[in-house]
Each structure stands twice: as structure tokens, then as C-alpha cells.
Image (cartoon, rainbow, N blue to C red; front, side, top):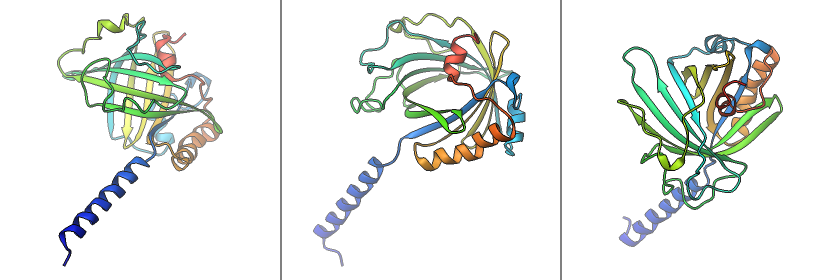
Amino acid sequence: MCHPPLARLMAASLLVAACAAQASDPPGAEYAIRWDPAEGGPSSAAQTFAKLEVTADKKGDYEVGYRRPSAPPPGLPEGFAPIVRERWKTGPNKKEYELTYKQRGPSPSPATPTLDQWPCPVGKTKDRKDEVDVSFRSLNDAARAYSRSCTVESKTAPPPVPAALKAPPAKCTSTMTRLKRGELTVEEWHLRSGRTLIEVSRSGAATDQDFASFQADVARKLIETHGIKPLQASMTELASACGT
């Protein structure tokens, strides 16, 4: 029979071990690759899923616009750039609005404030994340950026963009069709310029194993078998520039 002091000691030891394991978990990551079908490769989201030999089980159609704040929120880390994204789900009887603030930089977000303590610049929300954005620019070259973001959602009207950010309305909007299965997402973007872009992404952890898995399962197939030419810029950069 376990004596109370010993039971408390064992419980404390288990708690410490659990906290240590949680603290050592790798950060989340989004692995992505994108291309212009005019230069080769699958020309639609549906065709891309077929080439990857995966069947999508979720679909959504959206309109997306980006705003660039001229008055970044207090505490923006040095070297980080802020962006505001407005995304609306389109289609009959489908009302879903998202307002996302994201700041991206060359190094991990500072330890203080923590993600939970960080005041979301676009409103109160629990939908927030720190992530490593990994963009494949070729089979063996990937750019990494570190981001912190938060999203406010509404099913009645677009959430207002706080005036304090001094973020004028987007110069243009793009339409986007998204297909998903599990953590795999394919987006088909149509920019105002008439240009079509495709992006494949997969959520995972910032580990060598998940990097190698995306490289083999997605990047290698698309580059070597299906002839895509990876773009160098992020989708945020491409869409916010209105396709120029």
C-alpha cells in the first residue's frame, strides 16, 4: 500500500515529467510549395490531388484580401513584418468570415510574452499559433520564416479591422479554392491580374523527419515527376502584390 507522502511524491514526479516532455515538443510547422501552372505542372487543385494520388474530402471557396498596417502594434519584434488577412467563405448559404493578424520574421518569437499572454491585435480570440513556415524553393532548398498569428471568426459579418493598425483596405482581392484531406491542403488561387497559382501545404512539426517526409511525398513528386517550377515568394507576398 502506498503511503500518502510517497503518493504525493510520485504524482509530483509524473507532473514534472509531463511538463518537461511538453516543453521539449518541437514547434509546429507548415511545409509548402507553390507554382505557376503556366510554367508547367498541375493546373488546378483537383488535378494536383490526383497527381499526388490522394482524394480530397473537404472543399471551400473563398475571397481573400491583404492589408499592410502602417502602425504596427506595440511590441512587434525587430525584423518582423505585420500583415492583416481578410478571408470570406463564398457560395450559397455559406457565411464565414475570418480576420487574421500575422507577424513573420527571421527568428523565433521572443519568449515574452508567451503565445497565450500575447494580446491579439485584431481582437480577443483563442485561435492563435506560433509556427515555422517552410517554403520549398527547389527540391533541396527551403526558406524558413517564423510567425505568430491570431484569427477572429464570425458567421454574421466581417470582423472590423482595428483603426489603431492604420491598415487601409486591400488594393485587390483574390479568389481561392481549397481542397483538404487531413493535414494536406491544396489551394488554387486566381489573382486580380488573371494569374493562377497553386500551393500545396502540409501541417506538421519542425523536425527533420517531417521535413524529409514532405520533401519526398510532395516536393519530389511535383518537381521531378510532374514538372513544376517552384516559386520563390510566399503566397502572402504574391497575393498582396495583386499578382504583379
